[in-house]
Image (cartoon, protein in one colour):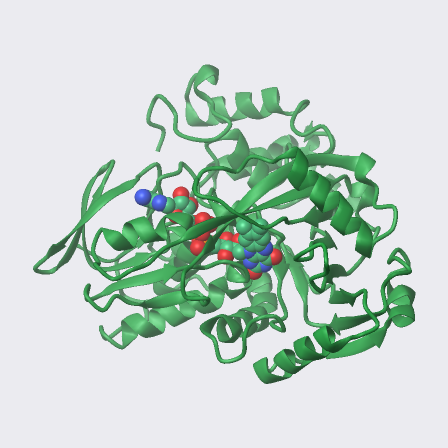
Length: 470
Ligand SMILES: Cc1cc2nc3c(=O)[nH]c(=O)nc-3n(C[C@H](O)[C@H](O)[C@H](O)COP(=O)(O)OP(=O)(O)OC[C@H]3O[C@@H](n4cnc5c(N)ncnc54)[C@H](O)[C@@H]3O)c2cc1C
């Protein structure tokens, strides 16, 4: 029997696994997809929110601020990309009461480094802001992160510390049992003492498998446009907007890897799988983005994508033990700032479990994790040395992002390694660049096939192989 089964290998499930794997517990993470980070965690703004937006007194506010405080140290320990780039919230009106309300929330939430500046001061910091900007809230602790690397880092460290990952493994039902739960999956039953429901937009369906209490998750679509790295320096801070007559604002931000991102829209939908982009949505991104930043180089868009927020029905994160299902814990309604809050949610879930089951720390755990060596980030001397040691680092596979064969082989062979093109892309950035994998896909596919001992026809962009490879 597993002590804890975590349903969902997104940022929240993996952060919970990272936290719980430090204890003498058998932890099993299951996900219906063939890789970690296949849900909402792979498609969002990637902002480590400072915490000025969440309603004071909510779980969201508390975990946002705690997550933001934890993130820099975690990025060093677990080796994922993170940059404190600051943020601004722009006001286009002479009346700045909206900004003052945000500042008050920031103070109540305990967010440090927040101030209100004039439009001219904002333009002095960010010369591409429009002349319409009247004032701005400046948040010094806001940051950007790589959501894939962060989630993979939690997962790999949890795996190294003993957590088991069952991927391509969909939970189809859950029965209560004398000792806890029987989790029925597409790969057989798992007995569990405790269950954590971190199933993102599907958390309501998982909840309903054990509980009669109401919980509804509404998917809220957010569409984006991602621009080439040549546009990455157009703004250096994350630029938010106060809501305007045109509706809820959209942001313009550099990404941690140096691209420029504009979005997201906000539209409630019914379909939990609808990640399409639309002409109207992208037009909205353009129109609203242009209110903040002049002449955004939309001619440098290299891709567009959609993420689905898991909007709960209580206006706050729902992280609790179900009243009618002992030791079944929901981590539901984890919309933004869920990425920021993920490490704090992991910690909070551990505290909830600890109140019910005595937990004992393992004597020895891996505290750190080393990520993939990114060849392009090395100095020339370091590159030469690496190529001498491992010649595969001398072969460039992805020209747009300068990703080498050595990095791709590492991505496939490391713990919880990539088995698909998207898996390689998220771990190494091969295929993330301007040509969007047009050039590197055949080589990446050949490397995956060779390393996994499968036919090249069986290599998938994402999803499950015809032949079982794990
Ligand atoms: C448009 C947008 C912008 C955002 N911007 C930010 C931001 O800038 N900063 C921030 O902090 N947050 C942001 N967020 C929020 C953040 O992305 C999410 O809160 C976070 O990724 C949620 O992680 P999760 O692990 O709960 O869900 P997911 O990543 O969706 O993981 C859930 C997992 O459960 C699995 N699953 C579902 N059903 C089953 C089943 N039956 N069996 C097995 N597995 C199952 C899925 O496959 C999935 O992998 C944004 C979200 C969106 C959509």
